[in-house]
Length: 404
Image 1 (tube, rainbow, N blue to C red):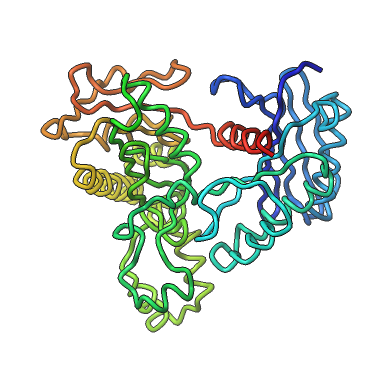
Image 2: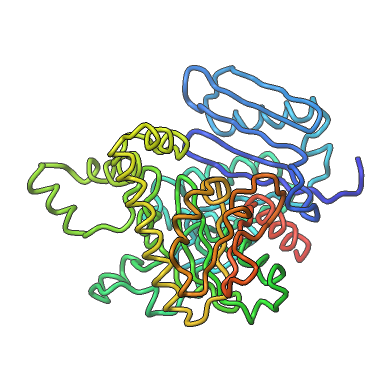
């Protein structure tokens, strides 16, 4: 193999493991050297898919555990000549959703870090246990390679107290680590770091809003490269309307559902996280399906879309006031990068605030990499900036591994 420095990036879920092998020095538009997924872990029929630029391999045998799935995936990669040993990996980067108050940046993983992540399970009971499984299995299979944890929350550890604290009893909040943590931080950091170059300015001179719009969605206000506010909170439920999550609501709705509908905590949790948002209002959470329903005159779909756009504009407006001076707004992730109508409607009628859209630029689907969708004379520039969280994690992992 070449002298290229490769990093393996792992994202472990409750029944799946997504992974990529990347060259951290590669351009953001280049595809990963290897990509794969291990899914349906614990089900009667598992699925592993490995793909390189020139080949593909699949396996549908049962997967009893994460460790079985990961070990089998590594074996399949070796058969294709791109296994961890074949590539001489420099580092393994692990995405971890919640770093709580403990982690303000990426860290090289040791036993103490694993236990600290385990202690944060109450803040992310659906995510951190799966991340720990992935970390422990990968460390066992690749003991000679540095492993690095990169946290979704760390970019927002800079939030000022006035943005981070809720108006709760201070002792209760402190005891239970209740504050605004924010999520999608790796994406917001990656996007916001590219914008100064697009503007021809230094990072410390740029005030910007970044909009990560996928099935999960979040907004962030970034002043001089430092995050000062974000829409998600203690958990990823807060903020914008999402595919299946409600976003911000009156918290008394929870008590009302308990008293009036007789719903338990788990039922309400399931309602707000999995049966609300676009899906709750329209029955679907895919924007392509939603658009088709709107085109066919479905009133529920139109309502879902209108609520989505309204909430998005509320956050953009509040962040404009927070920042005082705004230089740029960037759209990213699946919806942000592909739904031109969402971008147009989110920015409509804001000319008096210095935001002037260019309809032709916004409709352009043939551009690789970042591109401007605002008019040339727009005081505030609006961009589409494709995100690449895996590449960001790979760069962090290699950087920290080389410091060891």
